Every structure is written in C-alpha cells, then in structure tokens.
Image (cartoon, rainbow, N blue to C red; front, side, top):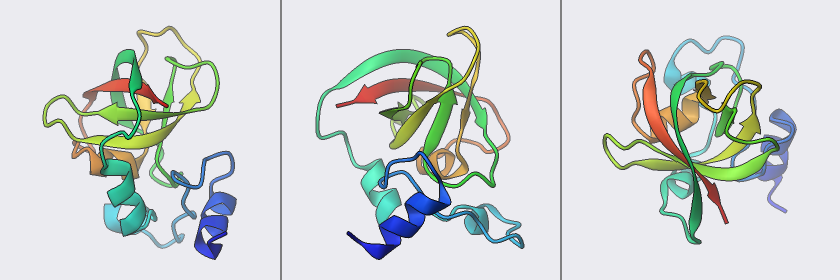
Length: 136
C-alpha cells in the first residue's frame, strides 16, 4: 500500500483512499493551502467515470467546511456512505466524491468539499446546482 494513501485515510476517517486527504495545516488561509488533495488525486477524480453511473438527481451545493479534507459531498440524496460523482452542468466538469448522508428532505441543499468545488470549477461563494450520481 502507498504510504501517502495511508496517511490520507488517517487524515479523513471514513473516506475511501481515492477521496481522502490529510487535514490542512492550522495556518492555511487560501483555497490552495486548504485543499490538501494531491495533483494525482485531482486528476483521477476529474477523469470520466469508468463504469456506468446511476443518477440520484440534482441538488444545490454550498461550500462545506474548508478545513474538512478530501473529496466529499454531504447530501440528503443518500442514506449511507457511497462513492459517487458530482457534475457541474454549467461546464460539464465532474469529480469523484464520497457521498455522505445529511439529514433532511431530498430537496434540501448539500455541502461540497473545497477540493471537489475546485475540480468542478464551481464558485466558492455562490450556491451551485450539481448533478449527483452513484459511481459503480
């Protein structure tokens, strides 16, 4: 096993190695410094899905806590942790994410990690409608 993957999983408990990252340093002030995913992770996450996806629908996403590392989305569209993909329909860019359950009706909004927001080129200060799908 790659030692850096092990560190990433320890930094973000519960996330798969592909979507986990270590926590940012306490002094981090910029999006670049807060996003601790590796360039390799970002490239892999942005690659098109290798297997068919199952659409869960659309949701309005806001930036989640920028100090929570990794590629994740907290959403009421899932009842359990699953691998998924979010797509920004405005530009077609997508990212692999770990989908985490969030209490609320399916019509409630979702929270998207800083790293995923950057990959799909969504505004960090606006609400962004995204398409959500299960991967695999």
